[in-house]
Image (cartoon, rainbow, N blue to C red):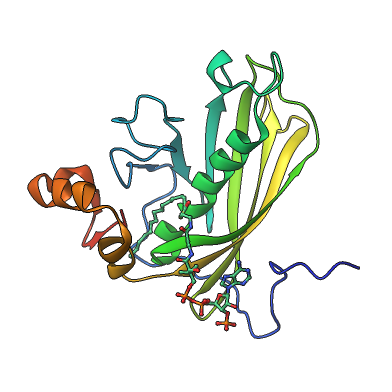
Length: 192
Ligand SMILES: CCCCCCCCCCCCCCCC(=O)SCCNC(=O)CCNC(=O)[C@H](O)C(C)(C)COP(=O)(O)OP(=O)(O)OC[C@H]1O[C@@H](n2cnc3c(N)ncnc32)[C@H](O)[C@@H]1OP(=O)(O)O
């Protein structure tokens, strides 16, 4: 059997939902106004609205439009992977780990026509030190519809310097001038 690099290592533990994690049903605010996945200020973005689940899990819907085409009338696979990356990355809200994607493995199981509403889910599967293992999927047109796309991912926890030292100065400076470009939930700042 293939040894995937997102296979959960023996020293991993079950993820713990942080006591101060947002309540079930809470709609997560965008972590950065210009994020391609969730930012309202990003005209070309996916504008995903991600909802907190009961455990270490999230749900979202994503409407596939003609702007998302790869083949005629069908969604572009990279775009579907982006939607999954977004809902997987937001799991850090529940475990209070500010993470970036280290690896994202995507299986495309069925074509996704323009006009589809994709019902996305993600869940944290395990934590090993700074590493968060997660999986997710997208169902066609209903929460229990056929699975069109699924993914497994590894996220690695990083500090704020990951963003301040690597991000382009123009955008980092813009946040300094307008801190509302990134979101604060409770007593912590969501990574940009
Ligand atoms: C406070 C609360 C906040 C709440 C939170 C909200 C979050 C708000 C969410 C935003 C949601 C955005 C959704 C989009 C998310 C992106 O799209 S993020 C952008 C895309 N990703 C990137 O740009 C990351 C680029 N890569 C890097 O910067 C670095 O490679 C990394 C990932 C930080 C790791 O580097 P590093 O810190 O030097 O660590 P490193 O020792 O290399 O790796 C750590 C461990 O991970 C393993 N590893 C690293 N890469 C891989 C890999 N590709 N495959 C397998 N294993 C790997 C290493 O083997 C190592 O394992 P151990 O030795 O510990 O067992």
